[in-house]
Length: 159
Image (cartoon, rainbow, N blue to C red; front, side, top):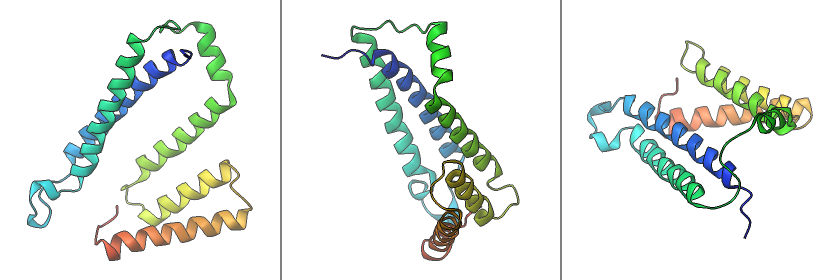
């Protein structure tokens, strides 16, 4: 049986727990009295429940990795340097930075379609998703479709 992923499972479980608690906290802050609907119909309920489920899975992953034999859980300086030098780590950091910037710009008096279209355009350009005209086309069509569906079909106002 392979035990090589013990350390990765432990730290991934901790990160999932932290992210899921952030999701639950943000869902709790969402308005719960929209249009006189009951609290269970508020927009943050389903996302909050999914956040709680993610927390449970992250906790189970971390606890299971603690009980499993194999690689020590401690991280050495060599491990950190190897991780930071990896191309995949740099791509992950770039994607995280673009996503955080997108989240920070949402609802800041910039129309939704501008921030979302810019986000999609930036991600697809950075990761070379195709020729420039295809990237622009996919970004525009996706942004227009999401904006239309949420505003007109679901009647959910976007930031």
